[in-house]
Length: 49
Image 1 (cartoon, helix red, strand yellow):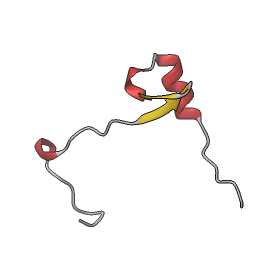
Image 2 (image 1 turned 180 degrees about the vertical axis):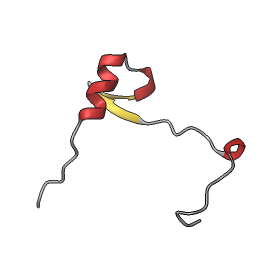
Image 3 (image 1 turned 90 degrees about the horizontal axis):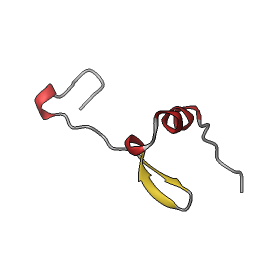
Image 4 (image 1 turned 135 degrees about the vertical axis):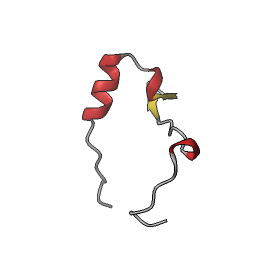
C-alpha cells in the first residue's frame, strides 16, 4: 500500500499503545487524562554508543 491508498473504515482497527510505567506495561488508554497528556508530551531520544 502506498501513501495514497487507505483501507475502508470497516476494515480498519484501532491501534492500542502500551508503555512501561513504574516497572510494568500498561495501555495508554487506561491512563487518567493527566497521565495521557503527560505521555503525549514525552520526547524520544537515542543515546550514542
